Image (cartoon, rainbow, N blue to C red; front, side, top):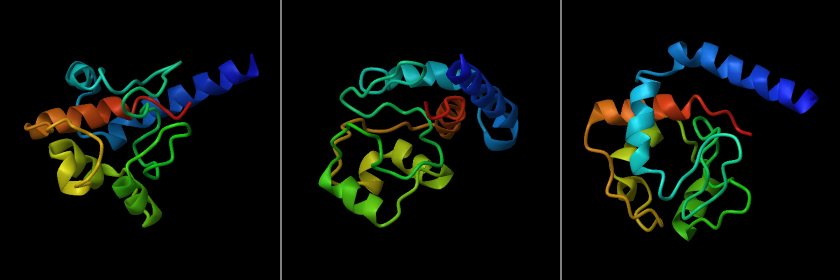
Length: 129
């Protein structure tokens, strides 16, 4: 019961903080995230797939999802202090190879700035669980 209450408080805090954090529309980002679902999961019970689960990714140190085998390139950047902040997420979501040239992600990227902002806003609604 205590864990559930803690989760509820964390989700509520994230939702209340959302307007101050996100430039995009989380509801629209949920639709764009459909392009990501084949490889990534979010929400309660999310598990690593081809890519890591993304709960709490915004503001998180890169390469730290337990149980996921990252590329050597990403591990090197993570050791150098890469954080999934707004700027790095924008670069990565536009073209993953621009940030991590030898990374595992095969997705070509999102072309519309609005879609990128919306996906980041959507991801911000999922605290690390």
